[in-house]
Image (cartoon, rainbow, N blue to C red; front, side, top):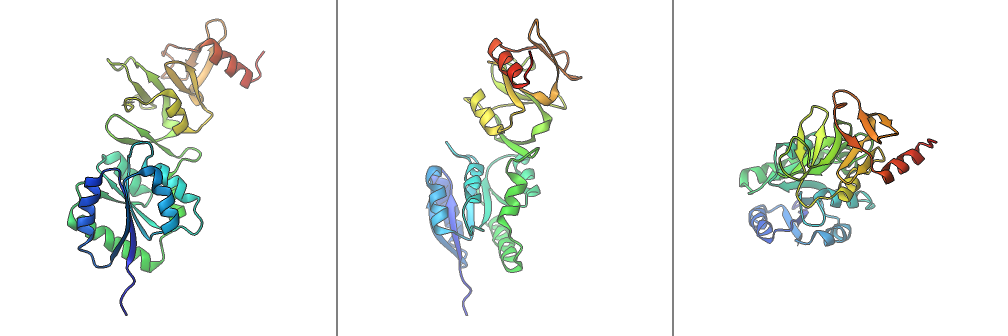
Length: 260
């Protein structure tokens, strides 16, 4: 009896990258390429309707990342696809994917790497070890889990508690840009055109508070507030930072803690 083919979908905003991957997949008789999609806004609907077994998913696309699409997939009933991230991004992304048990394929696609990905899928498929939701829980934000931050070079995966603050025009940088200051005092430059609102939406954590137009502070690192000056004093070694609450932020923070 002929083995059932693997229903496969490709999601990538680059039509040229889709074409390359399609060309390679056509050499695998076990692959049934059901659909390709270059519009990330339509990807969720396609996946929900088709319920493929294998999905090749680009990491960063305009308006919606691969991880945004993953969040949508989590809500789909009886959805248990194997997701392979199809990416050109750096070691930070790859390490996070490895830790979460998601597979990945580097751009430009190489036949041997693609063959290995399909072989791993086949083994997982027949062993019955593919638990899509368990993998999602390892990579999507919850509690102090990793968040994916759009950096100047790609996507950076960080634990929430290792981010001290986000600052615009940080003193360690000689140019105007949002950046994240980490607990080890490294800085990560944020992708251009990223604003404070989008950073807060990514974090989805009330402990991150916009203290003024140029800073979003992780309140876990706040040691004290001087009422007279509205100065924020952070825990060492960040206690030498000059951070001042705007009047509106001071009032909002004071009200949230019910301080007279």
